[in-house]
Length: 233
Image (cartoon, rainbow, N blue to C red; front, side):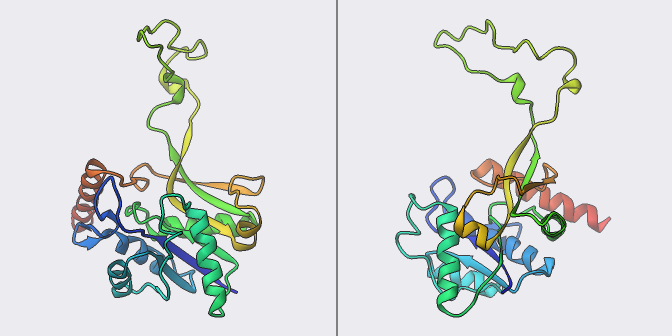
């Protein structure tokens, strides 16, 4: 039994072509998640789950394992991340490898550091959790948002509970997609990461950047370069 990190990197993304291997500040995007998992020092296996031979070769260059590719069903738009994770676990079992803890590291979160992974893992161990999921504070409170009628009329748009200064509102958090840790047995039986023994790991907004389009990509690259510049001072 052991720990596995899985980096899901399906080819053919629609929003940003080949984003999982697109070069970001000198490296293919998926390389950042591989390296973060390596530096975390808690994994017996770092696996890149892909349907592409090209992606697999790039992953191997950075030290990840890709003993098998996704089949066509797991590469379809209908397959969820957790369908894919179950597929990965079962395929490894076929070759005699079993794991008791799985971490999903989306390649689209390149600013998530190895320290984030270790801190989330510490919560997982200390809480004896079924799951730990990365979250970050929302940029704007949802209390300032509402639906709009077809007319666009703002009557009643601001909710009555929103009184006083913005700083007095409670903090709200969102799933950031950067880290998911789950007990394999729990995943295979239930698949729900948000139960009574599911816990949040709170990350900074900077480390929570999730790349979906060109603007996200430019922001991530800018933040990387700024970090490198600050480290060199």
